[in-house]
Image (cartoon, rainbow, N blue to C red):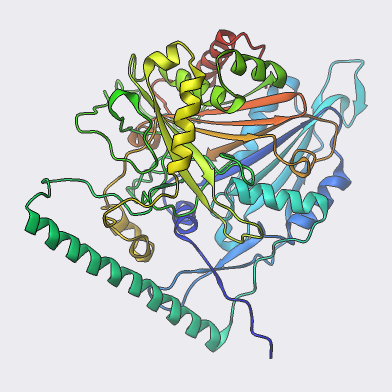
Length: 531
């Protein structure tokens, strides 16, 4: 008899992202937007949804029956959600429409892990006819819970579905006694990992005491040398900083949404209070803050407004001019993007005249990799003078060094093993120490595969990607320390820069974010067309 495939267990990052859907904090959702020059193709989108439903995005959670065992992923067994709207969106309302789609709740535990929506964009009188009047184009949105897919997983699923390639299906988990035995085996393996950690921790403590060199209050780092790329602001009940962002396309340094249990932090590196190295040297993922590095607190903000939403902006830039601007300053489009975002942090009034720490998501996904999240975080800290002079050659060298550091094992014993964290209830997880986080996260997809950029049909005007924190309040973001999250995607002749401002005090609304981004684009002499 053929043995069933092994269960696909939730990894550390999957579990942490899933908790955000079940607690009082904002869930993390990744979004892809296709801006088309013509009306959307309903048949094409139905076909895309059908094939996505046969692949890895379409999954749900099966709870373990043995304490300590990780939950399992299983095929969703639900119908895909496809919302083809008949009312056209005004040309000036595309950004608001996109954000409204990102706010629609998802429930990955029960199989509602993703959804597609689309609307035509109303044109001026005399334009092309369409449903409800002249059509200037259309906008298509795909949102996906970060718990089921980081950026690389999302790109892979979309490419497979759009090209009708063999889907990467989630295995059907065991049932009955087989499931019980499998859960018991997983619980035993998790417990064994915790036991090994306890043994190593005790040995390290004894050795340190013998040498009498262990500094009081020193901060241990999680072994692994890299930070786990996570979600939005730290959930109060989880106490761990989380930030958005994501892996890059397969083989690329960065992309949309987020991570796999890396090995340096308990939770991802994202906006928040940074740690900087002396002289602004690049800080690799998981590096601790230097003693004495202090971040001035933001001025107290206004009382929470229940209607407040995270400001978001999508801006189209000419791809060839971005390349030219980068080359003129000794860099590439990727290093231009990193510097652009770091300079934007300075423009918000944060770290005036000081170095700016930036988190750079890195994908570790392999071919036919079934993991939902596999992203790690590299980090660079860019000196103020480098940003002022737009010295992209320095940024390029620092980023290269940070990417190389990802995955390198750091000495020492983790303060808490990830296996144990995954076993703990939220009220205990909230007591764990928080790692340093970055002031900005820059996720660059570069030029994704054609199967991704053309997935919604064509002709494609622009493709945008971004991570959202559904319903995040200003209080939640303020507690996380604030920060900026940005994604950069190039399709055809257009580079689309997408920015979310998780800093309610320095960037209180969409108008403020728009002014900051357009002013920075002007500093690089780049014509910008905001949505």
